[in-house]
Length: 100
Image (cartoon, rainbow, N blue to C red; front, top):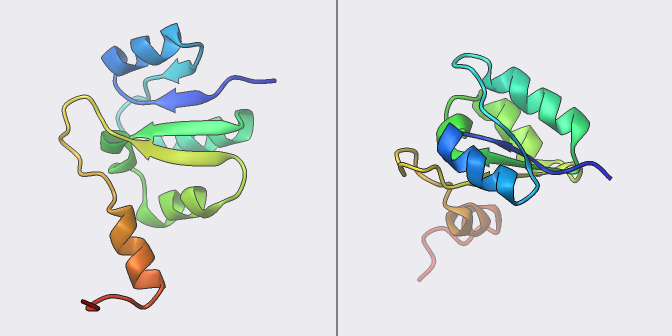
């Protein structure tokens, strides 16, 4: 069984590597290619929020919506990129926006 893959900064990648995750630090401008490669190789792909912010929104949405491999956005070290508001997405998808 292949290991999960983490895409993010070097410091956080070191921590994930200690936990047995295949941690990768994509070069600037190659985030989309790194995501595609990780999705082809691993059953679980963890993408730091700052890396996710540099990936085309449509491509990232497709990866997050796919059943396999499971792709998740995790907080980045600096907290510079905001995390997706999953609750707001669910409320919108259920037609509950604006409900009390």
